[in-house]
Every structure is written in C-alpha cells, then in structure tokens.
Image (cartoon, rainbow, N blue to C red; front, side, top):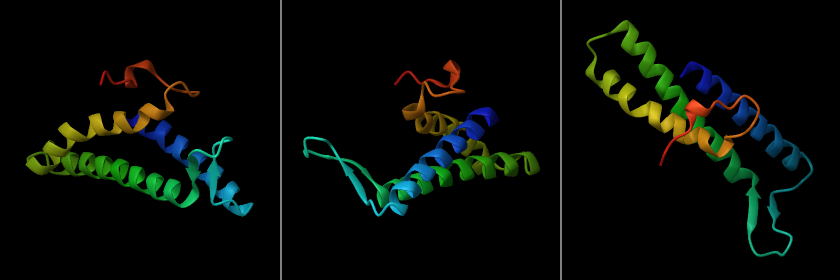
Length: 107
C-alpha cells in the first residue's frame, strides 16, 4: 500500500502542476472543442486534489496510530476501509508510468 500511496501522491503532484500552469496562463477552465462541456476547471481540480490528499493522510495517520496503539479499534476499522478507498482514488490514473496491476479494482 505504501508504494501505491507514494505513486498516487506523485500523480496528484503532476496534476497540480498542470493546473498551476493553466492558472499561470490566466486559464480558469478548458472547454471541449465543440463547446459542449467543461474539460477542466482549475479551482475544482485543486479542491479535488486536496480532498484526495486528505484521504491519503487519513490512511497514513490511521496506520501510524495503529502501530502505536494496536488495541485502538477506530484505527483498525479505518485500516479495513481505507485501502479500498485509496485504490479507488488511483483508478483514474491507471496505465500511467509506474501503475501496478494489483492496484486495479474490480468495481
């Protein structure tokens, strides 16, 4: 799971750099060529990345807490639920350099 988290943080960093580049160019959104829908909204993208990072942080905090306090049931419960959530967060980045097939989800 540590490899997945590290890899996913790199993907989020790269996405944030792309959004920063757009913002530095004065671009707030990208619209499809036919004008029918928004492809990227810079501020939404930043909020989305921040939310994903918070989920990763919660997993790492629960893992550290569980190591320090093995009898903590809340951390145990989080560690049962969060790995699936972390894998779900990674799915849009599947196929990029470093992607490992064992990170794929079936649903």
